[in-house]
Structures are given as C-alpha cells and as structure tokens.
Image (cartoon, each protein chain N blue to C red):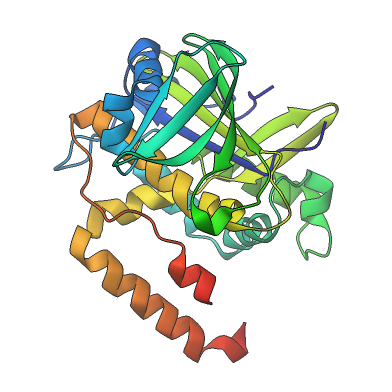
Length: 154
Length: 134
C-alpha cells in the first residue's frame, strides 16, 4: 500500500448525518463545490458523476459507501486539460467528536504530474472551507471558482 | 487508519470555544492556536518541508535540520494541535501531512471575493520578480 499524497482535516460543527448528506447530495454539493453537482445511485461499484451546468467535470466509481462513516470513490478529471490522466482515489472519513465532526479527506493514487495533482493542493482547502461555512452558517463565502491557469502558466 | 491527530492532550473544551466575531464559523482548534503555531520560524520550516514533500516520517523530517529530534517532536505536537499538520499511521510508521485548511480559513476571513484575483496577480508578480531568490 503506497502512502497517501494528501490528507486534509477539518472540524465541522454539525452532525455526521448532515455532513454525509452534504457529501452525497447534488443540491448541497452545488452550493459549496463551486457549482458542481454530484449524482450516483450510491452502490459500491456503480458510477458517480459531478456535473457543472450540465457538463461532466469529475467522475468515477463508488468504492466504499458506509453511511455516515466512510465514503470512497475514484476520481477522474473530465476537463479537457486533464485528458489522458489516470484515475486517483478520494476517501472521506467522518468521526463525530462531541459537538463537532472530524472530516478527513485523503486523496491518493495520483499520477506523477498533471492537472489533477496541481488542482488538488489549491482545490481541497477551498472546498472544505466552503463546506464548513455552509454547514455552520447556512451559506458559503462568495469566492471565485479555483483556477489552475496562473499556476499552469508559471 | 486515520487517527492520531486528536490526541486528547488538551481539554476538549479548548476546541469548543471561539466563534469568530462576524460569521459564526467555529474554529477547531481555536484560531489562536493556529497563529501561535505559525509564529515560529522552526515550525514554519517544518511546514515548508512538508509542502515540498508531503507524508514524511519523523526521521525524514529531522534529516539535515539543525534541530534536535526532541525539538522537532515538540514542534510537531504544536502543529498537530493547531491542525496544521495531520498524521496517519501506516504500518509502524507515522506519516506527517501538511493540512492547509486552517490557513485557508484565515484567508477567507479577511479576503473578499473581489480582492482574491488581484491578490493572486500581485503574488504572482512578486514571485516572478523575486525568482532569483527561490
């Protein structure tokens, strides 16, 4: 087992049930994930897909669906810039800690370089901050969607 | 597999205080912990090392540093308690990861939507102009 490349942790004042819904319900992901809606029948082995304004952005296969504890799915970036990149894997672990839930996001099995790797290091902290804001305050901070272009040009 | 981060050394009540003044986002750990953890050059250099290469063991982090192993351990505990470093166990190894989520939350607190693009442009300009120093 190779070691994971990225491990992100945030503590959110919410319940595991609410956080689980926020990770798996397209109406909610659209609000904190920069307009990306997730959809799946949520059976291990079946497909899931993120769409933004109707266009697929990320898709893959549901690997683990263990409500309200662990969700894992593969991650294939469908943006044209990422064409040809192999699938990586994202795992969400939820651990209730009193009034908060500890959310650990692990992104591993990444290819050596490419758009996915570059967008992760900027993307997850933004998505997790937005998720935390939405669940704790009912709204997200209005920030522009992340862009890799500045980094790519450098 | 994920676990070690919250080690129970501190009273949990510490983590349940501090709502921010205007947005009611609760910070766990409290934002004070993050600023204190960042206010030390040795700890920032450990974060730099993890930024360069994520998922290092204590031994790897100590390599080539002028700090003792004990000092590195002490700094890592402070960084973990501030949630700036997260750890996982893999086999017999404990791996350390940079967790930039609290730093992002600091940014969000003071940077407005329309400033973000300009600040990114300024950072990039500064980076380009200072390239020789990297």
